[in-house]
Structure formats: C-alpha cells, structure tokens
Amino acid sequence: MVDYIGIERVHELVRRTGVARFIEELATEIESDYRRWPAFDKSPRHATHSDIGVIELMPASDGRLYSFKYVNGHPKNTARGLLTVTAFGVMADVATGYPLLLAELTYTTALRTAAMSALAARWMARRNNRAMALIGNGAQSEFQAIAFHHMLGIRELRLYDTDPRATDKLVRNLSALSLDGLRIVICQNTADAVRSADIVTTVTADKRNATILTPDMIEPGMHINGVGGDCPGKTELHADILRRPDARIVVEYEPQSRIEGEIQQMEPTFPVIEFADVVAGNASGRDSEREVTIFDSVGFAIEDFSALRYLQRLHHAQRGTQPQLDLVPDLADPKDLFCTLREAPAKTRRAEEAVA
Image (tube, rainbow, N blue to C red; front, side, top):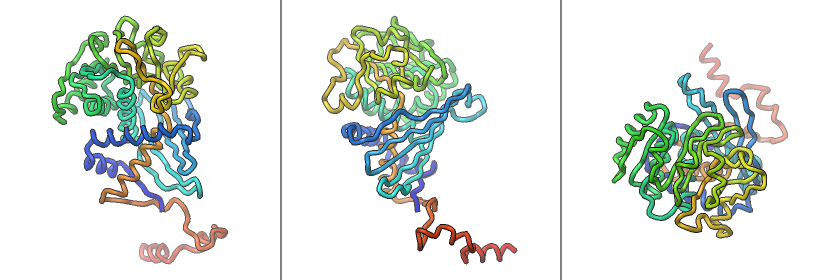
C-alpha cells in the first residue's frame, strides 16, 4: 500500500503545525538537502510547452529515494475559474522501485517556494531588513509574505499588482492572520512599491518576456527575489539589472536556470553562483552592504524531494486521516500477475451478487 496525502490532509497538517512554522521547518529540510548536493542525481525538468501553458515533470534522486513532481503553468486559467498552477508528486524506494507516497503538491509547492525564497534571502540579503516590495499579488503572494515576515523579520509590505482585486484579496487574507507588527502599504505602481525596499519579490504569472523591474528602480544593497520568471520566454527583470557591476546572481541549478531563469537573457558564459555552493561555504551570498543580490528562482526538483519527505514525516507523526492507495499489486507469487484477473476476489463477488 502507498501513503496518500491529499488536499484535506495537507490542510490538516499545515493547520496543526501553523503556516509560518511549516514554512520554516520546510526551509530547514530544503537547506539540509542542498548541503548534500553531490549526492543527488540532477537534471533540468522535462517541459512540454503549448501556446497557452506548460506541463512539466521534475525528477530527483539521492540514490535511496526517488521523487518526481507533475506541475503545470497556465496563466490564462484564472479567466476560466481555474488555477494557474496545479501539481502532485510521487516518492519511491530506489532499491525496489516501489512507490511509497502519492501527494498533492499544489498547496505544498506554494509553501516550498516561499520557504526557498526566504531561505535564499537569509543567505543573501542584508541583515535587519524591514521593508519588502511584493510585485504580483496572486496565489503565491500570501505564502511569500508569511515566509519573509516570519523568517526575515519584514515589518512593512509594499504591494502592487496590475489587478487591484488581487491586492485586495492579499490584504484581506493577511489581515485575517493578524501578523504581529506587519504594516501593509498599497502602492499605485511598481516603482512606488520598490522605492526604499530592502527586498523586492516579483511573483508575476504572464508567460512572456516582461520588464517588471527596470534598472532605474534598483537601489544599492537591495535583494531581489525573482520568482515569476520560470520558463523559456518568461522573465521579469530587465537584462541590465543582471549586468550591473555590483550584482551577484544566485541560481538553484545552473543548467535549468540557463533555459528558464532570468539568465536566459544572458550569454552562456555569464557568471552565476549555485545556491548549493553558498550553503557549502564555497561562495558568498553577499560581499558588501551595497551589493545588489539576485536570487534567480525557477524552482528545482530537490526542493520538491524535500517537501515530499517532510510531508510524509509529518503525516506519520501527526494523528489523523491516513489513507493509503492500492497502487501496486500484492501477490502471493510475484511471477503470476494474471492470477488476480482470472477470478474476481470473493469480496468483489459478494458485492456484485448483492447489487444483482
């Protein structure tokens, strides 16, 4: 039998743990896996693109466990009342190939993306940050706000979205949480939002090359958390921001980021640092208070590996509904797969007879 963690169970686990604590514990899990970067078999995700979206598979393995995530990105879905992003994941035992866990990853991806954003900022942003601009107030925004408030001490959140309804939604949800000491400022444009911000997070969804941030908006010492540019032909930062002589760009997995990240705009030899090297102490996340640091985030499979393992551990540790799925046959003779099709099990026969 295979563990199954569906949407209701994820809600239960997050509520019992608390959203902020869940994100921080997940960030710790992700950091521990980045510390053992060489142990993982790594590859860019497999993406199938269409004119209206993308469907991707994201695999990772540490030689003991294997995981993959199925995820889509369809920005026009919201006009049809559908989510832009949905996801589910599988974790399996490498020794047998048997699946161990099937889990929803739509909510969990939002949580792990926020966890990764805040984790990278811990290594890259200046200390004593107080103000963050959040550009793009859609489905990911609450998670980013909670993560940076809890893990980085953000006290002022400066909001802008081209859709005022998205900003209203974000304000309503954050107000209901009563986050201690958080001041929310609604801004009229991106330039107003980023002015004097210590951290700028961009989480926009349009599948196109965009210039959400332009060079004139960037101030010395800023940390930029670029989340929305995550597939070929989709960016948020003007290329001249990356070319700044005082800019330091950190990516998750360079071969994937060259295809999907902000650095897809740059020449193949453009220098970047992988986050694993920062965590291992082989590279610095920031060298000076005036340096502009950029986390060019596209989401990498190891983060979903960490999320699935963390979910399963919580699932087993916390009491509650723990359903399982019969995805793999349980046979007396593993060489006789056909036997179970020869005759319906007695339980099934009795049910069929009762219906008749």
